[in-house]
Length: 332
Image (tube, rainbow, N blue to C red; front, side, top):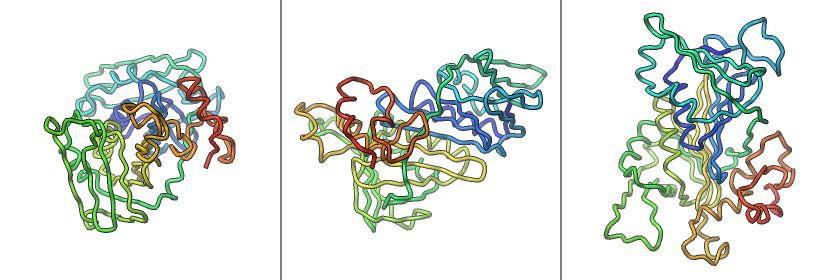
């Protein structure tokens, strides 16, 4: 079982994960608890890992072994995010009213129990059904990225607030002397009816600044907003690792008690015409086809050697057409 030190931080992690997909993997291991999610098009992956020290009490067992007759967390499983969100609906209110929150799993009964011990002796219990599954893995060598930025989450949030909620994608471009965030618009956009935003930052505004290659990468903003709300609750700086367009971009935070990483596909302009004769097809399609670029071979439901073929790393693709396009792609 697990009892929290900070209910607000855990709740915001659930809300951030919910930006990725309508289901997520709940993966307890000896060192702590991991929450993972990947979207249906395999173009966004998120993992939040809480060290066992994050919890007041943490008890894990391999399989169904007894844990000193205590409540326990054991096997990895998959949950529907909509069933978990009501438990952490109003995070700020929860932290004021809930004195203790515990989680335990019951493999025999196929459910996870979230129990909130509130003020005045009120106890709220949620028994959520889960599906047993292999743990979700992602392979992304972010230390190999030539461009690394580290910035306080508050500054990054202040930048993003200037982009309207309707803005789906933004472009991050870097040179050794400046960083620019700007609205991404497709070529057939009516600019007279579109608000364009561009914000430039100097290297001095970053805690760490390394630009090995000039690049401009475009990615979805929705998932990033979730990570920023979470990182602000932790007051931990955000690290950004990326390469050229078409390669993934990773936003991550890390401290002694938790780690979080959101890996997003980027648009690949150079492959636009070659990948499809359809002029209006959305560019993310090509990043998904070029999945050996996304995560450097990355979504796996079992631990695999990086040298395995790409086909063995991918489980069910969305369509047979996609699977056919991916079968010959080796992992980089």
